[in-house]
Image 1: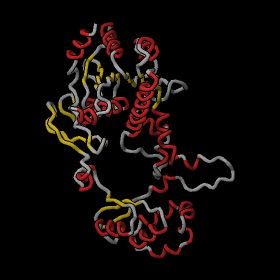
Image 2 (image 1 turned 60 degrees about the vertical axis):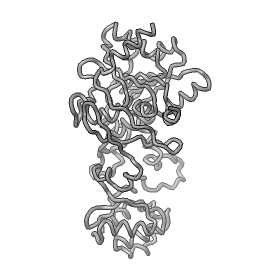
Image 3 (image 1 turned 90 degrees about the horizontal axis):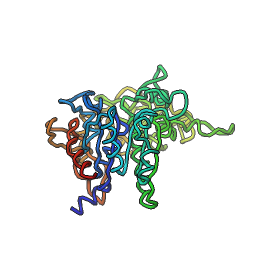
Length: 385
């Protein structure tokens, strides 16, 4: 028992989640993986709309499962006095409350941070908004597509038409990780002071903070005498073509590029001064990457990877997700786990990437059916009266 607790650092922490879609759900799923008791509050009827998106069985989609494993689900009608009263009791019994509702919603319900923390100062309250609480767009709905455009992700993809989506729910997920880090920091502060925290973060600010270190490096130095190289996005050109696929590479040093030139049959580039030295290459990276990636394939993927590896060039094969989950390296790190779900049957889930004291976190429990734990949770609340 002690070993299991050691591997679940958030055991004993209670979390109440009011959310739809991914930002809050993914953050709290990570807490659940680490041992926290996470109660997901859902409206009666369809619950979180994420339950119905994409591949699914009954009322649980693959996306919902991946963001809501190991939680308990309670259905509450927050349009009724009884539902709000129960929600308030839940919050005051918790260590953490998190929501991603639009500005003003929780205040109207009396479930806002100021109201709850006035009664329970040790409560950690995290509010996630799309565009923030101020400004002309504060009340607008925010989804990943919109945020990728607003935060600059679409403009850094190097697409011929100028803009392209990163084809994953990037902004939702990185906001979740931002929220998880902030809440964990608040828990640490509470251990030292006994006081809870109010955390207010937006998807927009989270996305800008995430993209800026490399995506905004060419906009960081403002003085006139700054030497501006190509944007970091220029390093993300096409991979090296092979006769049976493609190999991604990250050549940084002169020695790396010498190997790349040999592998694509462009030894003539070795003597080009503008491609020698990190400073020169950084000024011409877009054209250099285009030249080597457009070279006719001379080798198959295995031979290309072997040659790059021999020259210590960081490289890997370009894989689909289906191929990736069966790759020898990914199998070696046990990145996935299988389990039987009472509704979904056999499911293949990504495991927590954390290892604590050299051991993986225990496998998480299944994602909940809509309202699966309502009676259990309500009974526990009534016993606390």
